[in-house]
Figure (tube, helix red, strand yellow):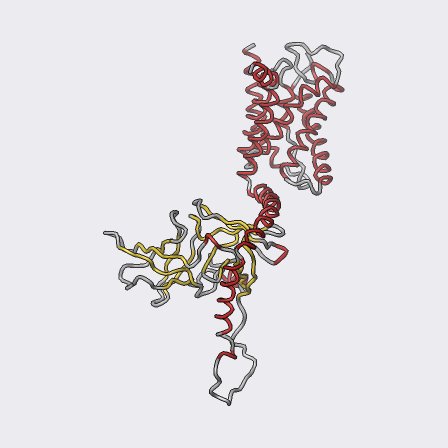
Length: 274
Length: 169
């Protein structure tokens, strides 16, 4: 024990030096945006590799469930194919239609790390800048909205989950078109709340909540969840709505990242007005 | 003795003000900016204890950081410089003894000694500063180049200040 104290005493200057340096660098990384993003990209590049290995094991163990989900999704899509419909009219004229233009592009990605138990949850995806992902893209899964890309490195990207106190997503009640905002206030990862729906609107349990398409990231009509419960606090003009999320964040494996091809144009239009 | 404390603390304040109000706005050739405030670390008396030296350097760097919106960068560079100051002193020999009351300045120890002393310490400071500002090791040599150019400017300013404000005894 005395040797230990002696050791610290003899090297007290060096220890002071190291701790002051660490503290300074801690300040640098925490308070300067640029340094923070560089450090972040470096760390996620390293942890991403470890996570990928761990994840491939986990994914293998879950193949059965994944296959089932994918088969169900395939079935749903097949039922939308033209061949699934009976053609009743033989006199169809076809021409190149300029009324429709592709606005959203989907990239599939795998979740390699994910949390649901913090108050600020994030996910990491196995695709990054090199695969065409950039900041502010929307992330959805076959069962609903997942989150928004907040940071990308070369091969990985970091997604702010819907289960994050900072996340706000513009939403709409499907049956009557009323616009509100989805927020998550901690607690269970199966539920979130819908705000800003005025009390004169009629709502029921089980009503579907979809994305409004008002943000530049999410296309319109992606499922978010269904109303689980609602009440009105006395003196308030808005409902207190609890919704059951469509996505089960605890077993999320495959997601789609959405690129809005017209986003730049929309942003540009907004800029001079703001 | 108390006279010395007053001189050192007023030097602390004046150097920080000059640095943040005047010199931080030079941006010669885009990136050259003399960081003269570390003259404070260079001029602390010989008998200053190492621990005190480190803490003073940290306070100095942090104050400059607060003004130049780069929290931590200058503090890290200053602490780094202060840590190596005693080593640099033992590295360069002087004709005069390092005795209490003698300041490591041109007036007390001569031009040649001070030039070497400031050149080494300012290089260390700037290298650390620029590495933290760029924050990556790729392009290390361009970072090194910038810091060398900047070092020359800082040393030039420091020596000019010495000649202007400190008369020979």
